[in-house]
Length: 427
View 1: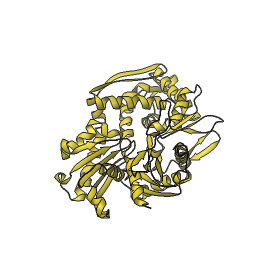
View 2 (view 1 turned 180 degrees about the vertical axis):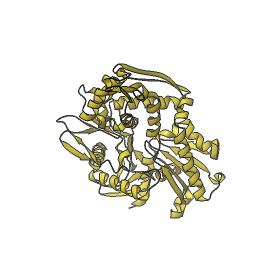
View 3 (view 1 turned 135 degrees about the vertical axis):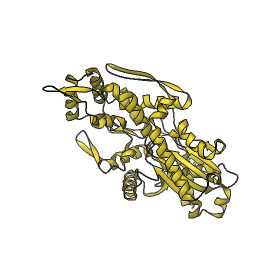
View 4 (view 1 turned 45 degrees about the horizontal axis):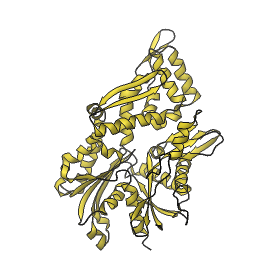
């Protein structure tokens, strides 16, 4: 039985999760329906078909994959929150603001919570990253947080309190402790990596939490999506025409424009390439291109909106490289079949800059805290990119393998947010 009143919502770039407190006072993840059975996460995606209401989550993916005539598939909306240039998009004859699109996902998710005997809670603890921008910008962070607050409010939640995602993960980790610890939390989402040093444990709960228990927080808007970008740039884009040339009359050879491939690298931008102007430009370039079949494959990728399939192929490779030393990447678009063995060494070389940025953020946080690395009792890693061995190695190098742990990598933030809600509203 679930007790009404306490709920945490982790709205993620790729997946979202919701947890509530049950009648015994324990956190419980909400599960959502899918074609493969109920699952603990809700894909943060939207799908629009002509003359049909929008759908979200697993239903959106299933409807999109089953449709012969593709509608509009939209994903990774959280990644746009800190982008002042992106206000919204036209879908059919209607214009949707970014806030309205996120609200639609949240409303669909809320409608699937399964609270049949009583209304869903109208007050929630909502997770947010420490920083939405790189380098950190307080004004931009406030702007992005305001957009997220507006969006979730549009979904029908009336009282919304923010909590940093890594602090929420600390609440989840704390539930397993029998003694107090000083811990560093690393939360790796689709769009951000966030870090917090915090004191947790039964003694902290018993005496009551203090602001001084949080020693420091920091973060960077770099995580799983940035890793995807490197795979696409190094493995996929060159086989779709990037780096090629085309003949510009009368006798001048020019490089194929790079900006469409920059959109491709952020695969959630792919649907925004499907404009008459962009398609006409690529069709014109294809006619005199040095590798026309590659431009044709790129055009088909855009026209058929194969962004989700591309994303799945990239995710599969990342997963396989986390578990093993190589992966057989496979993706096909029209005349071009991309099949290549990728090694873990290749992948780590491609993401070296992102790894360095993450490591620098951890070092900056430790320096600001005034603590020595040896004073940290435990490092708890959560989020999808925490599975990447090179990410984990950042913490092993600094704190030692024996101190690095994890668990419930995709849902610990939601669990912690629900525990935080019980603390915020104890009555």
